[in-house]
Length: 112
Image 1 (cartoon, rainbow, N blue to C red):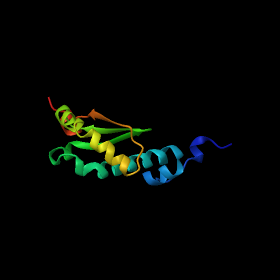
Image 2: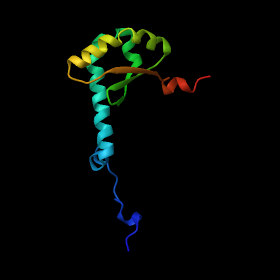
Image 3: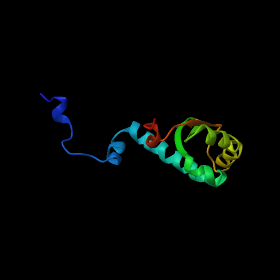
């Protein structure tokens, strides 16, 4: 009789190998790559002073999320969302909305 613990791999695998073996992980990895590609495509439209405060976030169907370090940066970034959408559509992505999520970086989250 074979138990689940004896059928497991006994050697470590890389994240890439695990993603290739799992359709769910492979899809997540593909979406993460695409999100990064989208940010690179619109980076020149984001004011230089804000670029370091913006990170690619999840893609959920036609909606894309950008992670922003502060509410002030999000407020400024909202002004360029129409240009970002136009740029993405011109490059073939079917994006209908961009959502901004303020996410405090880990190094600041522990401060009092």
